Image (cartoon, rainbow, N blue to C red; front, side):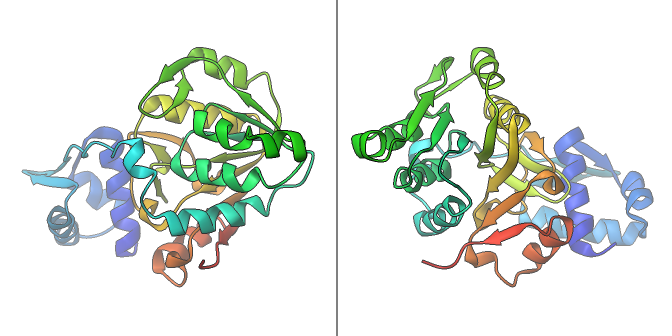
Length: 261
């Protein structure tokens, strides 16, 4: 097994169990104990794990930056992803959009299209699509899902929200993860966000993941989709030509790289 694949496997095990033994890694990876030791040493230097006697333990992740912060970083990449994702949409379709900084930017692009019905738990998404020009001139419709309101993310969550989601069948679901890893798949930092994303994906004919370059190789607390399960994964041009994108494409060839803007 190549080194990048070994490290992804190690991260996945740590994300699931919080710790892993060197004996288990030697057996599952099919490499020598010295190779495992070297991998763990290098990964410890990069952060994310701590070596202990007989293996390694997960170093607790830093808190995810607040939504207000996330909404103002990597805007060029997110706008490129949004433009490429909007190109997958046709008039008359029903779309799910979850609550995230990238999906909020996608909503701005969708508001320029016509004849769409947007089902979302995000106040920002609903605000963009619900603007007068979008509703009146372009005949778009927006449905804001009920549920427990989070002022931090400006979105609804919980059982009531999920119960509303399952009432609908969408043509496409657009979701944005905290992290995207070959082993762990698409993950969220917040279990509530993962629950919403999973429910939307389960009720959509096509599943679309929006992930800028910072997401690749990052693993959150809760998984909601395997890499191979997505009909499209839209990434930004900074991943073009990278080993990470090549490995991702080997697992799921349906990768759409947004052109630079």
